[in-house]
Each structure stands twice: as C-alpha cells, then as structure tokens.
Amino acid sequence: YKALSPFTNEKTPSFYVVPSKGIFKDFSSGKGGDSITFLMEVDGLSYVEALKFLAQRYGIEVVEEEQTDEQQEAQNKRESLFILLGFAKDRFVDLLWNHEEGKSIGLSYFKERGFTDESVKEFELGYTIDSWDDLLKQAEKKGYKKELLEEAGLVISKEGGKVYDRFRNRVIFPIHNISGKVVAFGARTLSKDKKQPKYINSPETELYNKSRVLYGLYQAKQEVRKEDNIYLVEGYTDVISMHQTGVKNVVSSSGTALTEDQIKLIRRYTENVTVIFDG
Image 1 (cartoon, helix red, strand yellow):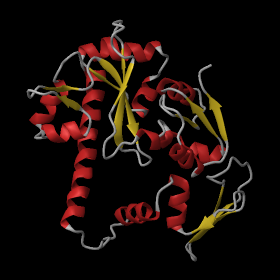
Image 2 (cartoon, rainbow, N blue to C red; image 1 turned 180 degrees about the horizontal axis):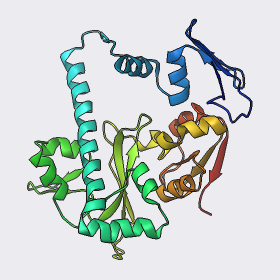
Image 3 (cartoon, helix red, strand yellow; image 1 turned 180 degrees about the vertical axis):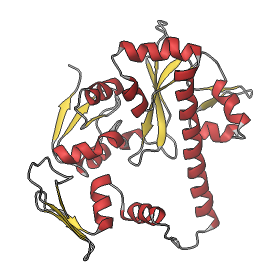
Image 4 (tube, rainbow, N blue to C red; image 1 turned 120 degrees about the horizontal axis):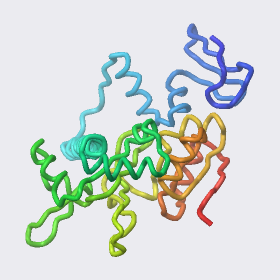
C-alpha cells in the first residue's frame, strides 16, 4: 500500500505499508518499523502503551506479571483518579450546555471570545456554577469519597471539617495528557471582583505535574508531526483561537515558565519550536 506520509506535509506519496512483512517505511522522514513502532511514532505512545492499545483493539489478552499488593493498590488509585476527573469534566460540560447559568454566562463568554461550538466541544470546555458544593454533592451521589476528591484536587478541606469545591463560578479548561485523559483543570473567573485570581489551576497530584504537561498537545500532536514545527503560546485561549483558524500545531505552557521536561516532551514530536509569548 502507498500513501501520503503521516509524518511530513508532502504532495507525492512516499509512505509504504507491506502487510506480508508486517512493516511500514516512510521515505520522506526516514521512519520505518512494525505496527507497534508506527503507533509509537504517530501517537507518541510508549512501547507498553502501544502494545496494550493494539491488544485491546484486536481482543488479545495481555498477561502481565503479578503485581505486589502495593503496586496493585497504586494502579487502582490512579485509575480511580482518572475516572473521577472524567466524571468532573462531564459535569462541567453538562453545566455549560444545559444549565441556565452555564448557558447565559459560560457559553456567552466563549462565544464572545469567538469560539465555535465545535471548538468548545473538541477541547471539552465547561463551566462551574456559583455554588460551594455542586461537584461535591454530585460526586457523593455517585459514591466517590471526599478523600479521593481532595487527592484529585477537586475539593478543598479546611480545619474543622468544612469541605468545598475548588472551582466555583468559572469557565473550565480541562487539561489532557498525551492519550486524551483529563489530568487537571484550569479555571478562569468571569467575576469583576479583583480580589479573586483571574486563573486558578488544579494543584499537583499523582496524575498532574504542571512542569511535565503542555496544554493542547493531545489535540495538536499529529499536526505537529506533520508540520515538523510547534507553536508555543502562553494561554489556553491562545491555543483554541489558533486551532480554530486552522493552525493546529499549537500548545501552551499554561502560564508557567518553560521547563526542561516540557522541552523533552516537545522533542518527542519535533525539534522546531516557534515561541509566541505575550509581549
């Protein structure tokens, strides 16, 4: 089989797949290998992640070494945090589209910024209503424990037992990891109260280390490989605005100073960086 390269922006096909040998070769970039290598290159997966993805897709059982109780407990906890953060994201999205306050304040703000419905949905943007415990109540109804909510950075516990939502009355920007799972949230206030910080983010958790994450990379990674260049901007809205105009190889350092880990993450996809910071 012959096709245009998924790694470079070419007009003449130079990408070949040979099913009988189980290999591919891309002459425009020099990349080649088997199906596992292909997934590692295209989606930026690790070797183990690529194996698991293929096994799941084709119904192949992956037998792993038996874990110790401590390893199993740690894995179960990480999976629980991913599920909880996904639940929170779904709640914020639902409030944006279906709650009167979400529609009149949150959705109106995104439309004022020029975001289309498609962009709002692609980046899974959301809203939190003006309530101290909306998410807390919804999560408890589903059986999630306060301790897990706190570990996920979704609630804050004060001395004396008071627990309340971290994000209230704000538009929400979910932060995804490279495989598209939500690991954290950024939230912008729409209040004119100057005592409130404009942006607040999830605290560092077992799943989220801000120095190792780039906002928008999940949505940008294939285009970055194709263009062999990445635009680095400051904020969430910069990423979405550029993405919407067709410039999709764009990520944000989310207001933090650029770190070595973020640079290493970029280098998995390209060595060419165009920096567009404010000022």
